[in-house]
Length: 483
Image (cartoon, rainbow, N blue to C red; front, side):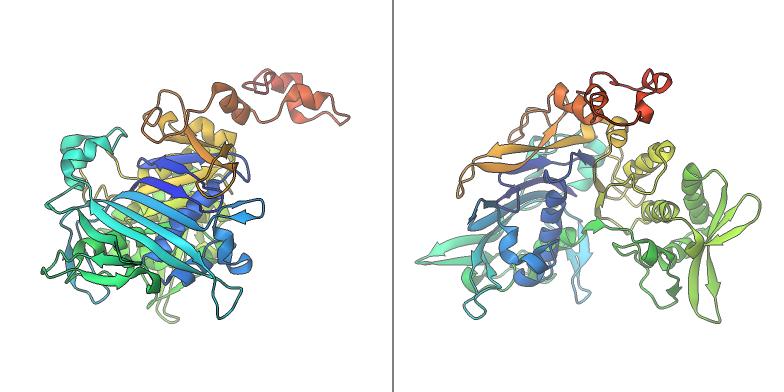
């Protein structure tokens, strides 16, 4: 679970400090930085398993624009470094790439990474990245209340999520030795001296090489970051039947929906899982009676089936895009193994406005319930969404909302420029916290909820629109104010 993210120098995130709860909704117009915040989270996730260059080129837009495009730009001048700092709650146990078990000595951690731009002398144009600083340390359980500011049960949720038996602070640290920077990986498994690496020659982060034997806590931090996913549910992937041998964990694009649901149904009482998913889908379409997975023995394929009340069966290829996305989210909610940080853009896409409450309710239920202990029925899972929709903003809990706004910022390496800020509503738990920007003003909030000024539009030479009708306008919130 990602509880705090600080970013400096990545795209238009010049000096950003955001705290997250189990469910967070980020709203704002195009071009202010909502997607860039998700890109920063995705980049950190990629860095936990790939080389620096490979991770950078997988970030949105970097493969065509180059690595340099990831650094903040003000006019013709680029920042020379970017830095990230995250606070996160990691799983207590897990396995490394060789299947070896690991147990964390602390589950509340702070990870910091600074990367510099390095021109590639061989290619002259591609450029590269260099580790300037990497650090992983624990946050003592006794200090958790200073960091976890969203409403939660201490003797239930927090005590079950946070464990700590670490006395020395660092699992990974960076020091200067003469003119060189050295990254040290401190062992907390079987003991032993720290391993030292020249930062300038590291092709990947030290965290990405963690294993169960020597660095179990760093390994579980790596596993946590690998679980940070931008969910881009593609209808073509959701409609595709799965071979019997396909992976049984749903992909970020919605692939392997059938094998995932089949696994869930056959690891417990089948009717319970199928009924749970069907009940969820019926919140979107009342006509749904049953959801199941058809097993085609001849072709060795699994296909999701939805049955309506009149007995008609629809295979997944014939379902609408909105139905498929909702179905995938319902399966995700039912899967205790999917302990992800889910980043979902524009959840309103493909959903009728009348059904928005259903999908927002589902997304909040996917996230961990901070009033209950963390267990198989309440996994440590988190949902972050971004949206353009005033209708979504009206429906989410007020303490979950951050409004993205373009603001002038003064960087350490670049002239004053326009960057992103993420502002809470006044009086909510983020308001006034250390590092937080000013709360969004009521005027800005109302302007977002009612983005068009009807009075201004009436001055234009245009046909009458729907909102101009007297029988409609009287029922529209903020219809005459326009912010």
